[in-house]
Image (cartoon, rainbow, N blue to C red; front, side, top):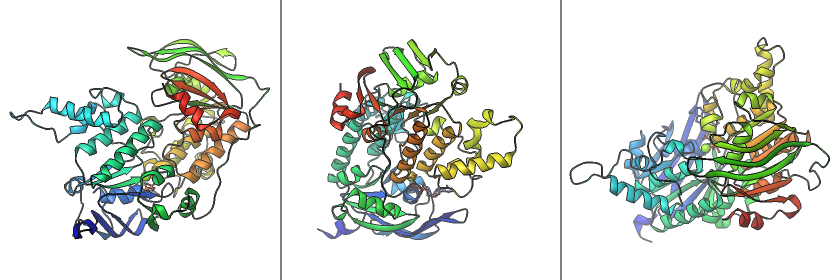
Length: 506
Ligand SMILES: Nc1ncnc2c1ncn2[C@@H]1O[C@H](COP(=O)(O)OP(=O)(O)OP(=O)(O)O)[C@@H](O)[C@H]1O
Ligand SMILES: [Mg+2]
């Protein structure tokens, strides 16, 4: 090994930062060397994103030093970080919805023709090439606003690849990706490592950490617990124990818990959803009993979200077929109508329609429940505040006070807040789309417990997820969709990862 190879690309020492007087990171050391994948793990709110925002020039540390290839460097802005060769793909995506994928990828660094005009042809070719490597299937000319979350994430990844960064920091890049896309991204990550890039991977999917990382750093409550080679970590259970500081086991649906005699709660018959050029969903039929946990499985774009949207009455597509709720034909014209009939919908895109980010936790918690408060619109604010505080505790949202704003919570805690606020409305039918995306293992267990408790009390649960482990843990039956069509409904006794993956493939 020569001398330059041993100098880390980035070396941070003693980084501390606090917000509103409370310490978020306390004297953390962290380094990245060329040709390695360094995983960063920890519970929601442990400080992972904050640490990376300091390396990306978004947050200024209160104390500590950052060296870039041995040279002490002040990263006072995002441009400083880019100049230092550091690219960060943030957890909450940062794309311009009104521009195409190609334009987003080259925003601010368009290649020019000989005459000084943006070279659109070169841009399209390069964009197509990178997006192709990532398994991006939509058109590179599509407006980013029209893409689904998983596709947007691929555009973000393409963008930083084109910027030719030496250090690539990915904050939960795979949380919105399907298994196939995740696999493609991990393969790409290995290739970038071979080219000598230093990669930081933040992920709650510990399988990924074991699959690609060379070293792992564990953060807990803003402190570094350990940095060690992945080969020295005994098991994922051992890693989880380091993260949460104790042992734990996730809850699981029992084999005999599926309701037998209960009435049909949701029935979907011959549902087709027509987009402008093709059917997004075609002839899908199934029925779900009250108190059942029913899963929707399939690759990105298989139609899981579209089916849930149709049931909730917010589908953007022309609809054929019948949807019946508790035996009555229904076609809701607004989310309010659906909510009045006892439906709640936790959508996949929390940035877009999950939370009012600049409002308090309290406001977010009680908002959907307000119409059901006895005596509404006359109620006592103190009482609401108490309910919100109670739900915040039950959902284990890590917070200082219910008066703090939703955007000051870490990503995973925002997701717990969204599920909690819908559970507060006491729905009879709970629709969940990717409910634990970006949620840490312990918090995931907490959300699973809440979902299973709701089902045991008679709530009908429909859950769409790209994580097969999640579905097999929770569901009584799973419907596998492939390119908009129903492949098969698998009962709990037949669950196996291989079967579900095979059924989902075209
Ligand atoms: N701009 C901010 N203002 C106030 N508090 C903040 C801010 N940014 C982060 N925090 C707080 O710092 C703590 C760490 O947050 P951070 O987002 O770094 O966690 P994380 O480890 O990335 O969690 P997750 O896995 O949920 O993404 C949280 O308690 C969060 O509320
Ligand atoms: Mg984070």
